[in-house]
Image 1 (cartoon, helix red, strand yellow):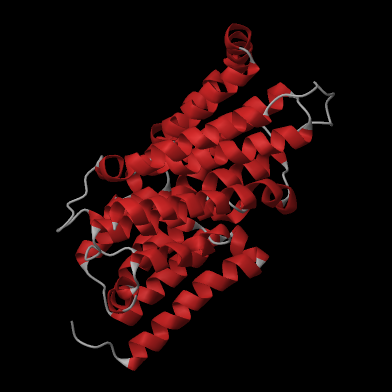
Image 2 (tube, rainbow, N blue to C red; image 1 turned 90 degrees about the horizontal axis):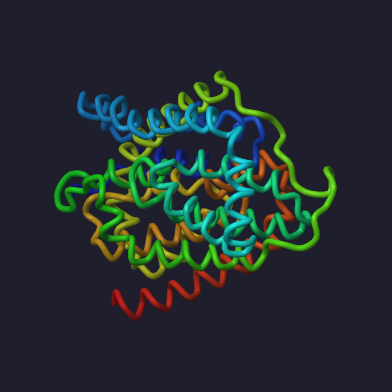
Length: 352
């Protein structure tokens, strides 16, 4: 590969810096993230001179599957949510609250790979609103459940934008990633994390039943307009990430691929404060080996659960249930750090 010109290096470095800093520090950009990332993506492709008809077609095509999943399952959930309270009461009566919560979080965690992380988070918010336990216990339950959802959604490319981008960037040689690529290669790491998160959620639930206002509650009911607009935003978000990932490929090939995988794992703890799909778009390239991809993705997925901005289920659940950043961090940071350390040790033993 030819050395990059200083113009390209400086230009892409500015794009990366703006992409990493502004969404976290400027409220307006955080609210209009899709537009901002689209501008950054187009800028990166222009600077690196990566424009092609293939890229344009890819950017139009790749977001379709996840956007349709979010749209269709969103309407299905809206039509059945009125039955959710009866189903929940039946499950609790049959299995008890602890086992019921374990089964629910396992279902939402692993099922998010098909239901999508967004819909799983909405179902979680509805369930928590129905339960009405003490707020402190409910916050812990939500945090652990979102870890499960964030991990499980990565098993297929329709689960969340991170997995959509990963498959899009790895679908060619040498990995030739298909729909089940992440399930085959990452399932052995992701599924145990979902189970541990479900156990922690189970241990957190319970306590005394409280009145309205003393527990978490949803802020609003989904409308048809909300469902359609959300699917459109997901389409725009993934399209923006396709452009960003393509534009940053030269600098990723030149520098990121040279970082040892165990160091890249800890570098990606930054996804606690930055959307992990954005980082995946910036970092993944086909020339990476499978072990490096595993370290990279697990770092993003685990750290993404530690703070609200890290991934989609955190953002959706915290918004719907009005959970503050400090409340989230008190539970999520210790758990996330322990999980990252445990996973790091295991991956260093097994993959090295």
